[in-house]
Length: 321
Length: 105
Image 1 (spheres, chains in turn orange, brown):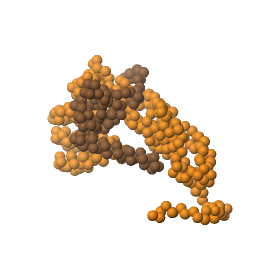
Image 2 (cartoon, helix red, strand yellow):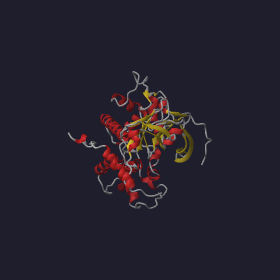
Image 3 (cartoon, chains in turn blue, orange):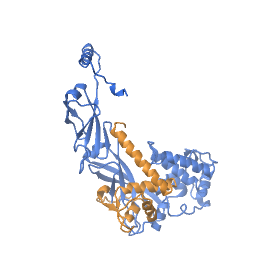
Image 4 (spheres, helix red, strand yellow):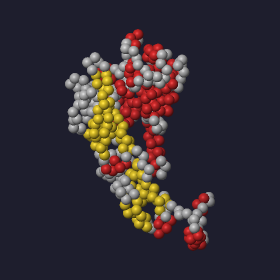
């Protein structure tokens, strides 16, 4: 286990005041909070920052951490001697029950070795859920490809399941679940796996597992709700004279009729070729003009002939106001 | 390490379910009744039904409720501010969808 430098995580000096620590946490939270951040590794960064703040905002935890930090520099192996923390007593779980604490295994092993993973058990006992009780629900995110949306997919999800032994110590066990992603699923939707959340205590039922679906961006297709968008390049003569062209769709290529007199930016709708479902979404092919290069005598002559054929063509007329 | 026997999975696409009761939504986002009732009073959640016992929350409100409770907890925001942030996030999402449709990635 590596020692974690919580002061570095919060970008403050070890002697920083409580106010400075809070200020820095707020700033970093705004930057990395998964609900507002566009940073690619936001979730992992926020967890680090939140864990550091959780340790340093509490004077008792901070004192305990400082005592250990004096002996261990960042990156060194950290092996807490048995009973090292006996001089400290950790009271309570923050300022009351209204604020749900972090999930027990949202903290690192390092944090858990200093301050324990006891929060989850404490919450289950005081049972804030009134009429339901039982184990807590869990949430996870899975990223799928557009092809999975069209065809469905199988995924293996690895869960970290907390297990409490007879002495009350909590360890994490890995468990794997095979799940079927139904076709037609959309980003932001949730799958619920009944009974796959935290185990309940005694006769209580286990919680559920929610899997939120995220969609990996596709290099060719853009997805918006049920509809799928595609930029379809056409040659000038295809746009002007009309043509039968082959267009890719996530379901395989289709023949598409480009009407004569088409202009770039015009969208052709393929009804029902978007995200499958009831109703299925549509696929929009937006025409883009691809210009061949004039890189030989015959092709230069072709462009020159085009110019002669349109003596009055004024492409920039619309710019005059 | 023990390996429990694989049980048949009961898998439900949440959006096809009609709705959550208050208790089920509390559990699904690890929040207390009072927190979710306050979110309803603030207009952040809009269940059908007259009183908490008969409230039914449409499935997409799970995402709203989770985001709202996370923002309130992690930024120590009051719920009026949470409502404002959610509105602004929805506007950003709408603008980004328009950009995607227009061909920007």
